[in-house]
Structure formats: structure tokens, C-alpha cells
Amino acid sequence: MKRLLALALLVLLPGAALAETPVERHGQLRLEGTRLVGQHGEPVTLRGMSLFWSQWAPQYYNADAVRWLKDDWSVTVVRAAVAVHHDGYLDNPEREMAKAEAVIEAAIAEGLYVIVDWHAHEPEAEAAGAFFARIARKYGDRPNLIYETYNEPLNTHSWGEVVRPYHMAVIPRIRAHDPDNLIIAGTPSWSQDVDIAAADPLPFANVAYTLHFYAGTHRQELRDKAAKAMELGAALFVTEWGTSEATGDGILDREETALWWDFMEANDLSSLNWSITDKDETSAALRPGAPGEGGWDDAMISPSGLFVRAWLRRMNPPPTN
Image 1 (tube, rainbow, N blue to C red):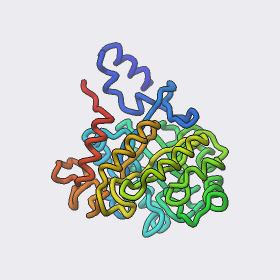
Image 2: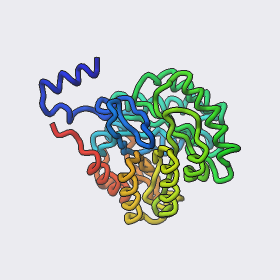
Image 3: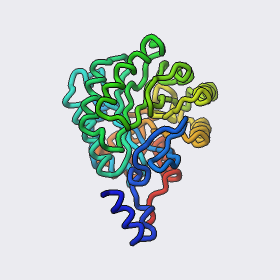
Image 4: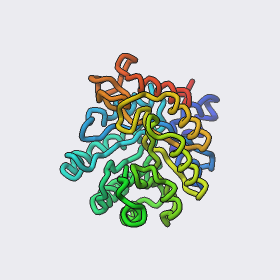
């Protein structure tokens, strides 16, 4: 019915296609080889913003903030970074689940794609499986949903012995309820060893691999690893990237960020910037005290946030009608 309504609007209003939301435009996402495509086979590159750790910046996990990111920042995807440890989901499962659901439902209402990220460094396969099974049962029939099953395995977690078996345990819990939506699997060394994962891929359809970078630290060597992974047939999705050093602080590296932008666009890589928070650090998109409900004027946005928002607006032009 939703698609029929959109087609009717196209007949009545010549410019109506420009008013389609990202999900109305692209629908169900899937992988063709290393590329993400929409329901009609057209290439799709999503660009958006990640929220900060859910237990430490809960004020941004609401519908108003998501709506503002769509309308003012021109995002096509948002990411709920559901914290697992450090007073996160393992200690407060219902509190953190409520935050995830608030962002999911806001994204559905706004026609955005939404990544539900199990934001952990240590493997917690049983808890993650139960979490994602619950999400998939409730929202798995919506094309908006994307699952990120393990944010950043550490450099001490090998692919063959730790990370791959983790995904082998968690992904079937999703697929039992949602056979279609995209899954993004974390990779070792803070989701940088995508080439190692690509050499021993997971045996599931519609699974991409997580690539993370921070421009002040990660440079051509990591781009070479990413290129190698794609040569091996892996689809990549940059679920987290920063303009700063890997600490989230330090220099704002505009030059290296621009090189990463060129690399991502050349390879049709979808991406989300880290992050929507008012923490006093370089990678934070907002200045301390920025309100939780959006409405951020330029004075409330950090230098990194202004830089990234300008890029998002340029790459994701808003509707004009």
C-alpha cells in the first residue's frame, strides 16, 4: 500500500520523487557482490550519524533528535550504539532496550535506515543473541532495520578462534526471525582486520563486514586492507568513522578525512560519523550543553560536526519540493 501511494503521488506531482524518504526510495536492501543495492537493484550509499554510547549520552536517543538529523543534517541512516558493558545492557537490559527501540521507531517514522549496534569490545554471544532475537521478532519485517552484531572486537580476539564463532552463534538468532535484512559483522582489531575476515568469510547471505577508521590515526595502510578485503569478495560497511585520532580526541584531520571520503565514494561504501554527543572531545559533533532534542544552531555544533554536516548536506541533498 505504501508503494502504491508513492506511485500515485508521482503521477499527481511531477517532483514527488524528490520527497520520498530513503526507505521509500530504496526499500529492502541487499548485497550484490561487494555492493549494497536497493529493491530495484540500484546502487545505494547510505551516509549518516552514529549516536554515542547509549549509557553515557542517553539524551539523544529520542524521536526529536532523529528527526532533526534527517531534516537538518540530511542523514539517510542513524546508528543506535547500544552499550553492553560499563553500566550498559548487561546491567540494565530494559533501560538500554528502551533506548534502542526509541531510535528504531523514530527511524521508521522518518523513513530512515537504522543500525542497531551491539556496542561491545568483549564477546557476549548469548546475551547478544537474545538481544538481537528480540529486536528481529519485533522489527524484522521492516526494511529500515540493519543489525551490527559486534561493534569492535579487540586485537586480542582472533577471527578464527573468537570472532567468527561468535557471529556463527549470533547471526542464526537473527535469521530465525528476519531472513532478509542486512547484517554487519564486526572484525578483529577494532573492526580493522576486514581482510582477514574476507579470507575466511561467514557462510550467510546478506552479511557485510564492519570497517572503522579515525582519520587522524588510520591512513593508507587501512585503506589498502579494505581494498584487499573487497578484492576477496567482501562487502564492507563503515559503521563508525571519525575526523579525529583513534582516541576520539586529538587533531581534527580534515585532509585525511577527505581522502577517506574519496575512498568511500569510489567504492560505494556506506558510512556513519562518530558521533552525536556533547562530550568535550574532537570527534563529538556537538558542543557541551547541546540539547538532546535537536534544534542545534551552528554555535552548538563542534568544528568536527560542522565539517561533517556540510559533507552530509552536499552528498545527501534534501528534497526540494
